[in-house]
Length: 432
Image (tube, rainbow, N blue to C red):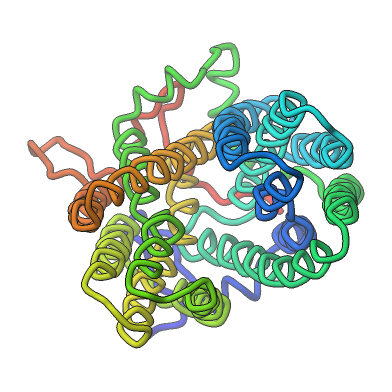
């Protein structure tokens, strides 16, 4: 394979390894920030145990989780708008500082309504940074598939390392004091915000992007206008379905593990296997798939994930369950970085935050719907859930593929420029 390959627009595509070596400092800074944030991200993991241990019912804990989920949908939408309005850096700082303050208050709340309100607000503020962080990565690298995937691959690696460390640290703190747990979470958010405020600077737009964006600067483009982009809508539908499938690793899988006579320890081992695979293999797999067309990679990843999780219903022991984890973990690793990189390639200048915000909204909706529908279907009959998971995996794979051309003048989605408020896609390299 040659040191560089050429994409269809004539832009030199470097090898993935070369793209990794050439990543600008902004990518490493925001990845450091997400590592810090994930190490201390305890509240979403331990909130149910905290509430039940404090005397609240399981239904009350479910209510808190439901409100938090709605807050996360809103947080992604708000974060996308803020990232494009006030800038990536200050959106991230605002998200981190407000989350820190609210999390520090959480363990001192008594009445359930107050807990619901504060945890719901944390759901909003804790997600506001996500579209902005993704936009930093898109802004900071050249507009090639290899560069985008390298940036998101490093970001995801930092996130996975932080989550792994956070699980261990959180377990130790929770066994000692939930007050200490939530205060440590708040401290991590505060440190995240300080690091971003001190080290991160927003990337300037390239001249071609700046000129193109100035042509539509007087036009207010909101989320309803963005949804006129049919390629984006297809991608968002794919994301909802794909997340519905993937969340069954946290909903249907533990229920199945219990039904076949295994316990929490076995489920923990399965999730630990998934975490180990992702931590060790995700970045190399991202590099391996970076040479292929994003739509085809998304389709393969979605199909593999759906098949792997659907096969769960046919397993009865740890050996077979571990085999299915290997399959759907492979699908997860194929898709993980490319989904955000792909939506970044769809976004025109000054709309990257909103495009990433819509991606976050779609992912959160898929996760929430999958949790509710998955549990209800499993109660009706496990076969119903696993059949739906398999069908949804096929559907998400189909949605990942570019739509067929209907005429000679029909553009391929990877080459199109028909996005609201912008004549051309974001294909120029940015200044560093």
